[in-house]
Length: 428
Image 1 (cartoon, rainbow, N blue to C red):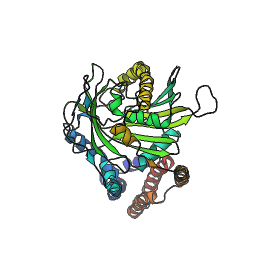
Image 2: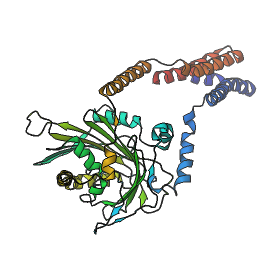
Image 3: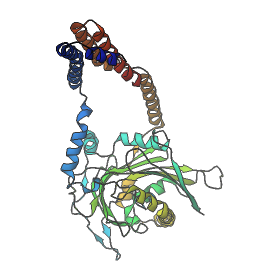
């Protein structure tokens, strides 16, 4: 109401010149305050102000070179269910002969322990991935709640599945499988042994090892999987590694950048890929107190060019049909290993693990609790630095208004500007 009364007073001036001069004296401080605010805001411009423009430029510039990331996609029918692991063999034909599916030979990185920083820059698997998987296993990653999807079983296997939809990214899946009369070491080798995988996983088209580290067991693999008739084949370049804590195994596989594998139009490259799991011994279904069963907790999500709603429907309909193929494959693998068949290269690499102690896991838990407490403490304090530009703008506008007029006009300007910033302060 103070601003309206000032306008009425100006309009009742006896001459046009007086009204015009009074109106200019009223408007000038406001425009000066706006200009000062713009200048101060530009001087304090944060780095995220350019993110939108840079993102648009990056997307437009890389659309042709990265077709897999240009449209939303989600988990394939079998990728959540069949514990899709990177392959490290060449394609096996029906006749049993092997054909090279990729021309690059595997690279043995004997100096991998001294080049961890270089590998981290290239996106290989690091201790941060172990920390993330540990949070997922303990359900302390801070994500949304899991929605139960399925609970099925066979005489020698139990299966449960969950899904959640994060605010950003494709749907995420979590499953728990319990295999009776199986050790964690046998199950670990089974999922890592891609030479045997071709006998029970009919979606594996071709695979090849690009690089492996005999010290940490880290591998980079290139593989292709086939999907239902309405989808073309998908190509993956995946880094994988296993950590051992006691008799529990934390297995991480994720998509990694790798310049030695050129991108092609077909098969389509899947860049965002995460499929990791924890393997550990548990009590069997009969509950005799002995740890003779094996539990596998799987966490999976990927962007593969399929609309998320369609992918979720496909996963729901085809999940159990694919999962129930795993148990017969595991039993056949147990028999083959018991017959004394030599280990494949992949099974051998599965036994090269980075050992971590229980103290390490407790330290992760402690650091996470301390960081959570620190964030809570900082969020309860309002930073004073953010108020400095506002104080400069308000003070400058008030000082300028007072220097131009000492009557009702000054009071109206002070009232209007003060009310505006008071509202901003309440929102903050």
